[in-house]
Each structure stands twice: as structure tokens, then as C-alpha cells.
Length: 250
Image (cartoon, rainbow, N blue to C red; front, side, top):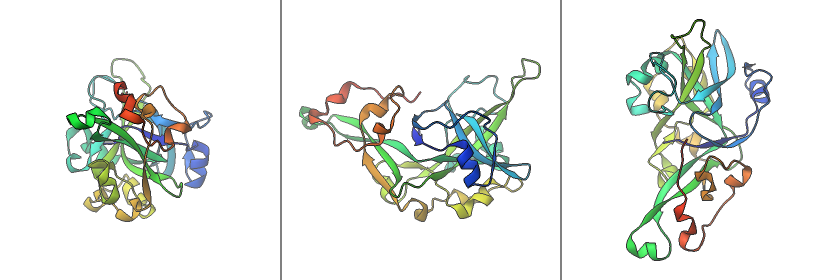
């Protein structure tokens, strides 16, 4: 899964780098070191023969939904079940890229101290990101929802991140990872006029070869914490004194 990530992308800079149209507006970019589902996130898409940068709700809302937030938060779309009704139309016609600096994953490990003898485990957070500091672009799906209960409703744009089986070194942390797309796959993935071919859903080992894995503080478990310190290496504390901290995705 991918349920938390970090991004320092600025929409105006992103648009310049990608030769895209910045549709975010006058709102300045803001680093977010603990992006969680239902947050408004930056996306890149092709629409009306132009590449565009838009902000969308992370958690895809299918067009036929009765309301936003009326069911499970669809923040991930598994590549092996992307033909499900919630994602089928988006996979065919509305695909996007989600820029990020890296993402967080949690690994079940034996607890320290006496817990180790008892077999107790706890979730330890890791940050996965390119070691050269470059930006990642992961595959996403997007959708437009309208509230049919009101006249002239404002459209709600939403997205989900596509996940695949983890490959190479990333499988050491979790069995799923976001689908990182190398630049030579962007045009085919974003083209709304053509269905995506099956090979685009295959992980590129070259695209993830430079991704490092760093254990970080459990401060990231709480969405209330948001700062660059969340990305700093954390070797753990004696007896894992953090055991009482709970992981909150939302």
C-alpha cells in the first residue's frame, strides 16, 4: 500500500519543469512531509491536448458515488484488480502522475526489550526515496464527481495511486509499492485517447534502483506531525518506548 508520502513540489515550478499549464491558481506551493489520504495533492495529467498540473483530493470518488466520503477512501488502486468498477473507467480514460519525494511504509518487526521474548511485534516506519534527491512520479488514476443534489455543482477532482507488487530491495519493507513510472512511459500513461497497455502496469526495476530505505521516527504515525524532521534517520529507542503510539492514516 501507499498511505503516506512526502512532497516538496511547487505547482508553478512543476509546471515549468514539465512544460505544463499550472491550473492550481495563485495558491503557493507548500511542502508536505506527511501527506495523508483525503488531502489535496498535486497531480499531472494530459487534457485537451496539453499537459496540466492540478490539485485533487487523494481518495478517488467514482462518478456514480452518492456523496464524497460516503464509503471507503480509495487512495490506492491495485494494478492486479484495476478492472474493478471503481477504477475501470479511470484506468481507461483518466490517468495521471502523482509527484512525490518519497513515501512511508511500515514493517512488522519484533518489539524490543521483553517484548522480543514474548514474540510481540510492532510497526516500524521507513522512508523510501531516491538517494540522489530526485523527484518520483507514480502512476495515478483520477475522476470527476458532481453533486447531483444541487444546481450547478462545482466539480470534485479526486485521484488514487496505483500500486504493484514490490520489487528488488523494496520488498524488504512491504509487499506493495506505488508504481513508479520512468519518463519514457509518461506519454503513454497520460494519453487519454489510448487505453493503457498491460506492460505499463509492470514495475520498472530501473526506476526504483536508486531508492534507498531509511528507518524514521514514529512521529510520522500521527498526521498532526509534519516537518522535515520526519525524514531524518531514527535508529530506534531502547525497549521501543514508543509502543503506545497508534498509526493513523487519516
